[in-house]
Image 1: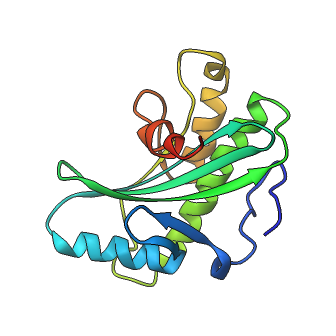
Image 2: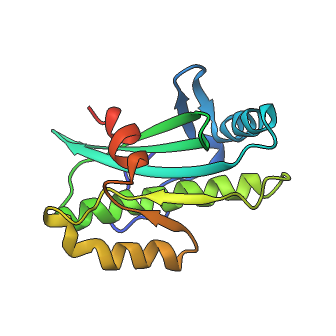
Image 3: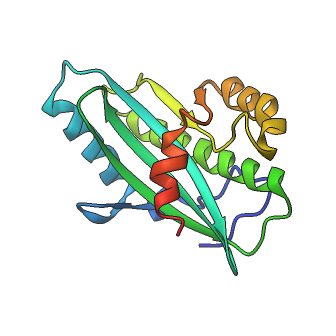
Length: 173
C-alpha cells in the first residue's frame, strides 16, 4: 500500500487489503475484525457495548500511526485490534493531529460499512483523539471536536481518550 498524504480520508486503497492485528489472533482482515466483534457481543447479548476508535503516532525516521479499534463491553472488559501505517514525515502538530483524526474516521467508516450488513448497524461509537486541555493541542480542540461531531460521532479528548492515549499509543513504540 502507498503512504498517506495530508489531509487524508482515503488512506485505505481497498477494503480487501485492510488488515489489523489482534493480540490473540494475529493478522486479520477487516471482515474478520467485524466477525470477531460480533462474536464477542453475542457472548453477552444483553450487555452494553461501545465501539471506540483512536489513533496515536510517534515520529522517528518515519512517523508510525497506529489506529486501534476497541469493542468495550461496558463494565465487563474489551477486545481490541490495531493497524500501523507509516508516513515519511508530518509537517506540524496540526498535520499530525489531523492525520490521526482522519485515520480514525476512515476506519470507523469502513467498520460501519461492514457492520451495516449485520444486525449491529447502530452501535454506540466514540472517536478518541489525542488532544487535550493541557499542552499545545488545546488550540486544536474546537476544530477537531467539531469535525468529528459533524461527521456524526461522539468524541473524547484527554484524559478520557484512552483509545488513542493508551491502546493505540502502546503500539507506536
